Image (cartoon, rainbow over all chains, first blue to last red; front, side):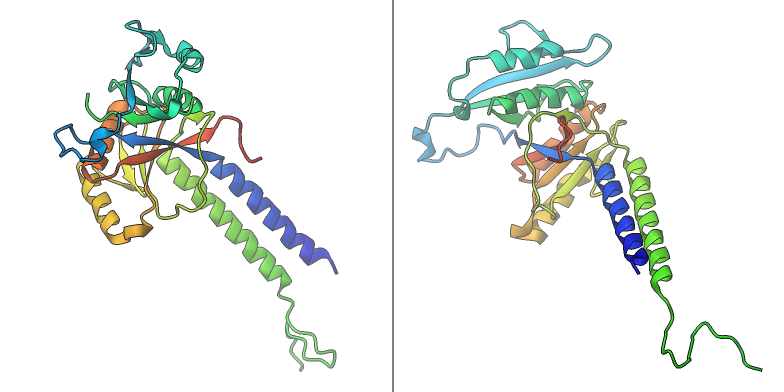
Length: 133
Length: 144
C-alpha cells in the first residue's frame, strides 16, 4: 500500500520547494566599520607597519539624476552605471594592502552603495564603511 | 442492539487508521508555516540588493540582524527599534553571548537611503562592533 507514503513524500517535497523559494539565496558582503579617530594610543609594534593605502570613494545624488561616484576617476564624478567597469579596469597592484573607505549621501539608495561595494569586493579590496559625513 | 464503532475490535485485530489524520495534520502544518513566513516577509518587506560577490555562512545562527526598511524604519531581530537603542542592545548581546556572538548582519532595503544606515553603523561602532555583513541576494540566483 504505497498511497500514504507517496502522500507524505509529496507534502515534504512541496514544503521544501516552497521554503527554498521564500528564503531565496542570500549571501553577505563583509565591510569594516570605520574605527574611532586617530587620537587612539599608538601600539608600539604597529608603529613600524605601513598602514594600508586608502581610497576614499563617495557616492552623491541618488535622486532623479542618479548616483554619481567620486574617488575612482580623479576629481571627476562618474555615473554609477560606469563605476563598476572603471573599478574592474583599475590597476591596483596588491589588493590586500588596499582599503576603500566608502561613504554616501543621505539620499543615495543602499542598492547603489551595495553595487559599488560589490565592484570592490570583486577586486578583492576590503571596504570600510564611513560613519561620518 | 450493537453500536457501530470506528475501532474495529473484531478478531482481525485492526486498529484506527491514523494515516489520513497525519496527512491532514502535515498539510495544515505546512500551510501555517508558509502563511506565517509570507506574513513575516510582508511585514518586514525588505528587498535587498543583488550582488555578484559575497560569502555564504552556515554557522552564524546567533548573529544579530538589523533591518533597514525602505522608509528608514529599523528592526532588530524582527522587532521595531529606535536607532538610539541599537548600540545598547548590541552591547548587551555581545556581553551575554560572549564567544557565541555571531556578529551583526544588516538587511537594508535597496531603496533605503544611506542616511538611514549611517546612524546604525555609528551606533555599532560605538558598541565596539568592528564589522558588519550586508545581506544581499545572489545575482546568479545561487542554489548550485
